[in-house]
Image 1 (tube, rainbow, N blue to C red):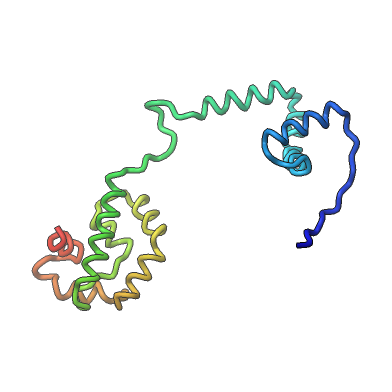
Image 2 (spheres, rainbow, N blue to C red; image 1 turned 120 degrees about the vertical axis):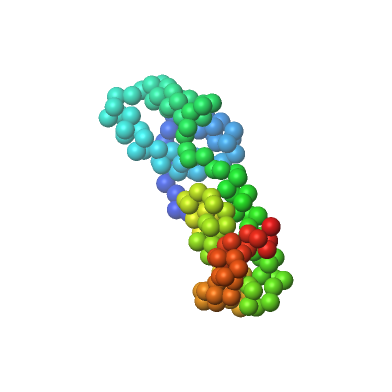
Length: 176
């Protein structure tokens, strides 16, 4: 196999610098050229340090202090929490709907939508929306495989309206 060799340029560095580069590259299990490529990516950091008159030690201390401040602390809210109750409910209803559709006659199948899942789970809108978007391709494929479309739930709604009210009420009762 003929590997194409990259064009190279030789640079002169002191023996001490070469030794330092070699030792670090060895500990990181990368080649010296790869290490130098990585270091080139830090030029903007270097320039920022120069502009702010930060020595390496001061820059490292600032970064370390920031990393400590950014660590989660008990009782401190960092990101919106993910409600396991909402996500568990979403997963449970997805399983129930998939199973229902797989075992039901065509006229009793349900077209799975984000709104339907919101109604069934009574969960956080943003969390359900994200979960739905994450599984949207899978859900749409399921709907298509079941031979159902956007009109399915309207037809089903007319059929069950008097006894159950809404499709989500009906599902809550029959899939309890």
